[in-house]
Amino acid sequence: MLVEKNPDLPNVWDKDGSLPIHRAAMGGKKEMVLYLLTITKEDAEPKPFESEPGLKFVHHLISNGMYDIALDLLQRYPKLALGDPSPMLAFTLNRSCIPKWNMLQLLAALNLLLLVSLTVPGKFEDYDQTSMNWAKIFIPGWRKLLRSVTEFAGNLVPQIRHIKRTKLLHDQAIHLVKWLCSEIVQLDSSKASSLFEKPLRLATIVGIPEVVEEIISSFSSIVRHKNELDHSVFHLAILNRRENIYNLIYQIEGLRQVLLSSPDTVKNNCLHLAGYLAPWPKLNIRESAAGAVLQLQRELQWFKEVENTTLPQDKEVENSEKKTPAMLFVESHEELVKEGEQWMKDTANSCIIVVTLIATIMFAAAITVPGGSNGDTGLANFSERKAFKIFAISDTLALFSSTTSMLMFLSILTSRYADEDFLYALPKRLIIGLVTLFLSIIFMMAAFGTIVYLVFGNDASWILEVVIGLGCLPVGLFVFLQFPLLWDMIKSTYFPSIFGKRSDRILL
Image (cartoon, rainbow, N blue to C red; front, side):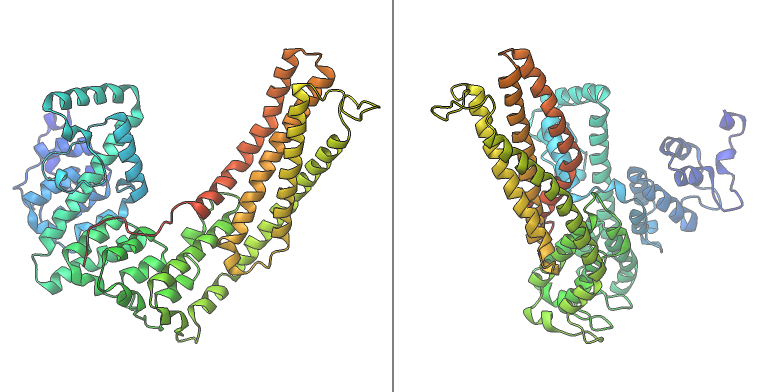
């Protein structure tokens, strides 16, 4: 309506040097940007899509996830790709539209299960290696049917539309990064290096492996670049605990150990940097009550991983403060060890009281036979009934599991609490202790239920049903309250490592 009244409004510059289309891009209004593109005069003076206004416009488009519009504009105005600051810097402001590697695997699995057709036309198909696209194996008729089913399912289940949109945005982002890299590498070496340096450093700090991988692949000499502290991309990845960036080292064959062993300005090699405490944002992510223990375990995993990757002599190298990596690790993590030790002891003390009570009750129940015993034979009066046999088995299992749990928690209390104990020994004991505690509660409820049924049930089946239902309540509460902690411990201790080769693509 405004444009109908005054067609010149889309071309009016404000005091900050912006047109309405620039403001729409800044605010992330994609539909408004698309509309204004059709009515904004490209040949007006000053040029809206060239020089500084055009470069700012591209930055706003990328930072707000409008990758398709940004690519179309860059292809029409390729000089913008070579502007300073580089448009690649905008990717570091919008991490969410480039999902992590494990999230892509989840999306690929959902793709497979839901038959979501995510075919991206043109060049997108050349680089999409994360998702098995079923649509490619069907004839066009089947592809049409799949898309129809997908659209129908998407209308019913919004999550399906979200999956499709997320994958599409990821593909567009990667294609845009590839295109920008291909344009920049055509410049002379020094100019290309200056345009790549800051995006590479910031992408490493915030953790965007796709951008880092494409830059290194397109301009391999950049991997040797260091900042003012002589930190390379892998030094920064270790300092900021970005495992998705560090894992790119496995795609570099020749210079792997050289890059990790090179010292910085204070003679710290990569193993020294792994010995420093993780930055506050990483330590502040406490996903469970056992945050200190899990974080210390992750810190130890980082240190061991870098230790296994670097040269053996790097373990004994001293920095400018005459400290080896091991000494630096112990000193930097002293407070975290104390916090983890206190939490482990508090947890073990609380749990050992519970399992001791369960063991006492189960032992008393075993020697106080429900229903009494035959005075002549000494056998239990209910010994021939199935419910009594269930009671005997449940009571025995409850006693044994609670005793095992008691010993596990006792071993935690008497542990030496050395740094390396938090890597495997202490988490393993806590896992066994919690699992056996959970089992002892289940068997205790089963034993109690059979006693109630034998003594008071009079073979009434409804009594048994009520007892089973009520017995599930404490078991369910234990699962609800303690399972997240147990799951975090199991995942951190026994699941596949966060480190390792994630792609067969060779960077150098």
